[in-house]
Length: 152
Image (cartoon, rainbow, N blue to C red; front, top):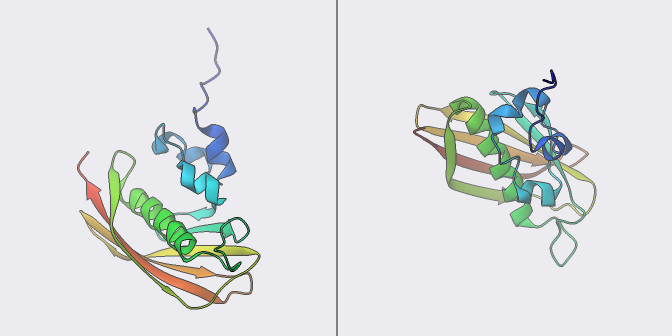
């Protein structure tokens, strides 16, 4: 009989996305999701009060070379959904029910940082504001996402 614990099946994916090991079990068997991996999103801070991640511009651009507006929304929905999950608890499920985005300026290179902060943390709904900035700290976009907490 071995004393080694069985590693989480998504350990490699979770670590690559910046998810600390103490959160691996609560994320279930699904990891961070294929789109998060494909977009190069990496979490840099995870708490109920603030969720932060980066995403490269390269590989996520539209035809003119600017970061695609949809990429902003993917980063925002990822951060808002993970933040809602942290609020709801490990045995809960959350689903996005509304998201909007205002784009303030373009980005053609570097890393974009998204920061989600709670606007409302309720029993059945959460709302987060997600601000995307460039490496100079300039605001690129502002999104708002509302998630519904589903009964377990």
